[in-house]
Length: 351
Ligand SMILES: NC(=O)c1ccc[n+]([C@@H]2O[C@H](COP(=O)([O-])OP(=O)(O)OC[C@H]3O[C@@H](n4cnc5c(N)ncnc54)[C@H](O)[C@@H]3O)[C@@H](O)[C@H]2O)c1
Ligand SMILES: O=C(O)C(=O)C[C@@H](O)[C@H](O)[C@H](O)COP(=O)(O)O
Ligand SMILES: [Zn+2]
Image 1: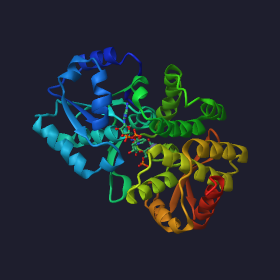
Image 2 (image 1 turned 45 degrees about the horizontal axis):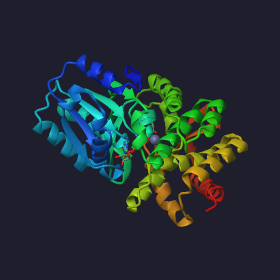
Image 3 (image 1 turned 30 degrees about the horizontal axis):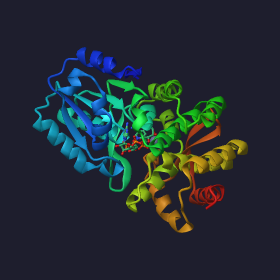
Image 4 (image 1 turned 90 degrees about the vertical axis):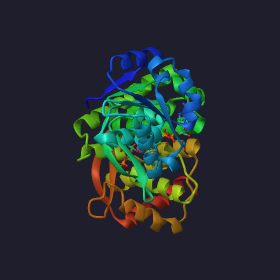
């Protein structure tokens, strides 16, 4: 991965120096209405103060074509050229959509990601997946283009609602399960109710490194990168269904529930240890609650899973674990096994 990733809590100097070293004709900063208020005013950076601000609506409900068109139009209106630069200052919605807008505007202009949620810091801002939701499917339209630079700080997290902190932590849990049993245990012990932000920055480094290593080996998800989709075959189906019903859930929550369902599948098909499955399920139930589903939802969920991007011939495809640190990608799951896993997920969650 050629991307420059900086971990710092000295955000003002880092941004000042980074932008001073770059040549650009115009600078746009893409924010959402929340980061415009809570984060942008915190940054003392001259270049950023003079930038054109493009604000989008918050949340996944706005990660769509209409918003994308709006950003393209605003880039045009401010006179952005091929030599312009975009800074995305926000959560995963801003980095995904702002990154895609930049990657497609005039066939692509460079962008820098400044993630403001734990989720975008540990995952969305890194590794080059950009895009929007479309036709009821998550991230259906998009491209792989990396931000030139990603500036990761925990300084912005003090205004982050607890729900959003937990949402990001789910992707950290995912990385830990891909990495090792020790990393998994370390995260389960981290006190999310009284956050030590310096310690969190250290944990973020370890977690981002897990993603970075995988992306460097397989940037365009030809194989190994599917590991980063652990929990997402089920998770994206739950998230899409919730969004469709007008009751959106945070991405990381859907991933947490998806991790439990896919740990069940991992146990069923490759003997993922039942102690770890129960540790995970207990943790997820305690911190994320349960996503309520009944048998009546199974057909909708399975239909969504058959449309997952990993699916090659319409089959359900999951990345699964033999143990923490031991992932296997491209597992085909038949409908009966998926329904059995959803039954066990409901038992574990007490639904
Ligand atoms: N590209 C990738 O590799 C990748 C990886 C993981 C997730 N994603 C995508 O990321 C999105 C989720 O990202 P997210 O969880 O950051 O959601 P988000 O961008 O919607 O942010 C969550 C909420 O927090 C608010 N917010 C952001 N920063 C804040 C701050 N510092 N203080 C107060 N409020 C703040 C936002 O306005 C929003 O309301 C999903 O669309 C998901 O599909 C992409
Ligand atoms: O970076 C990746 O690769 C991931 O899969 C990370 C995921 O956490 C993230 O949610 C990603 O946006 C999912 O991508 P998709 O291709 O399944 O839409
Ligand atoms: Zn994710």
